[in-house]
Length: 316
Image 1: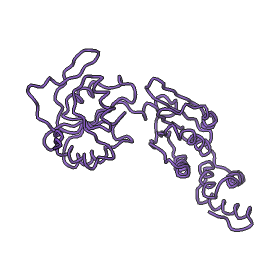
Image 2 (image 1 turned 180 degrees about the vertical axis):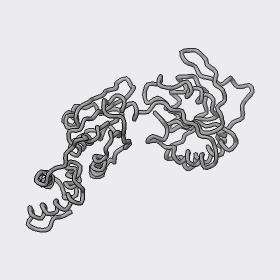
Image 3 (image 1 turned 30 degrees about the horizontal axis):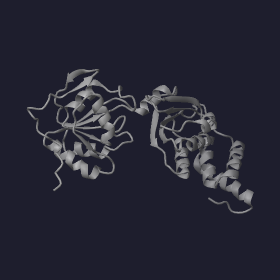
Image 4 (image 1 turned 90 degrees about the vertical axis):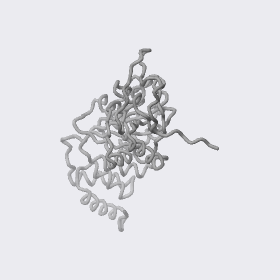
């Protein structure tokens, strides 16, 4: 008969070793964490990038809910934390969430961590936090590492206003459509990309956003950290030599404040070039992003030019 898994919220064992954690062989005590859900930011690469409060909390909660127990165990073993680890990820969340809520209802304390960085930022957890709040339990934020903020801080681009996109669509057509929408946003853009798509994405960024300044941040805080700063066109040109192993954060400067709206003649020239290489739909998307003119106006003019060039009706 299969043994039942241990409950999430276990009573304090009077004979158990005191809660605590170790730093450089120095053992430090950790008080029992307050009841509630603790959102704990963990290192994005370098295991030394963790706060004392985070270590105290991880050592003091009843259970740590994590995406991958193997990854989180590296952190707990590094700091000699005896912790009950339970998986919580997008594939088991529906089943795991009620157990966490039940533990909190019994006065337990649960830490939620992602594999790296701040929970809920491109990681599961939103529904859990919403349901925990709806049930009236406390939620605590323990700020710390974030690849988004780390990339912004080293990109040498404006940081007064930024837009975080997360991961772009995997398919090229959907990705180009989304990049065209992003091109209109008057803020520094931050996005994640995988190594197997980063070269294609850089080419599409250069095609749609032109010569904006940008930065490629690879393997932040890790041994092989690499930051490349240049224009999108230059980064796309050199992408064939880019090391594609690892994790990437792309940071793109906002549109120039003094970007001028193209004249009618310049718009026609741009549209003719785009129509020679793209469908009307894609040509319009690119022209809108580069011309500063309203989409309705650009679309109407594209149809006229397409009709003239084909001697018939333009096609969308």
